[in-house]
Amino acid sequence: MEQITMGDIGTWLGFLAALIGSCSAIFLAIKKLIKKLFATQTAGIMAELDAQKTTLNRIDLEGTKNFLVNVLSAAERGEQMTEIQRIRVREQYDHYTAAGGNSYIKDWYSKLKAEEKI
Image 1 (cartoon, rainbow, N blue to C red):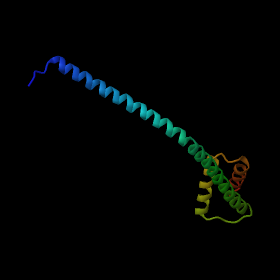
Image 2 (tube, rainbow, N blue to C red):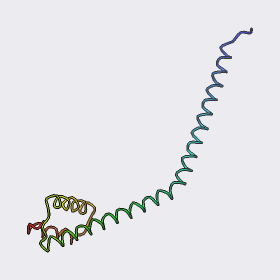
Image 3 (cartoon, helix red, strand yellow):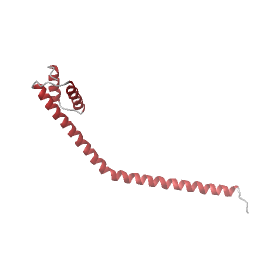
Image 4 (cartoon, rainbow, N blue to C red):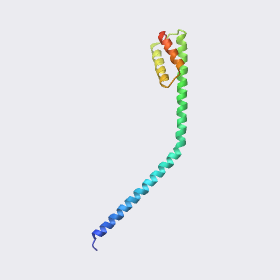
């Protein structure tokens, strides 16, 4: 068996370091490429999801507004509400105002609240 010298060990360590460095560089390049491809592919999906979110928020706001108009109209006509209905109206009103609802509902609600109809 021949003798292993320090030069041989150094050569093998250098080769091993170069191999690991090359593999790391290849891995990082592939990772970057895949990430870029996924970003390109998912851009359209993300745009569609944003559009869906906008639509759902609008539907939610309109549904809440319809509920409040019906309840406020009934209160204005003098129909009595249970305590649970009052709580629910307050929840929906808070949700509506947090979502950026318009001022005529807010004014109407404030007026009926001051008159103690809701």
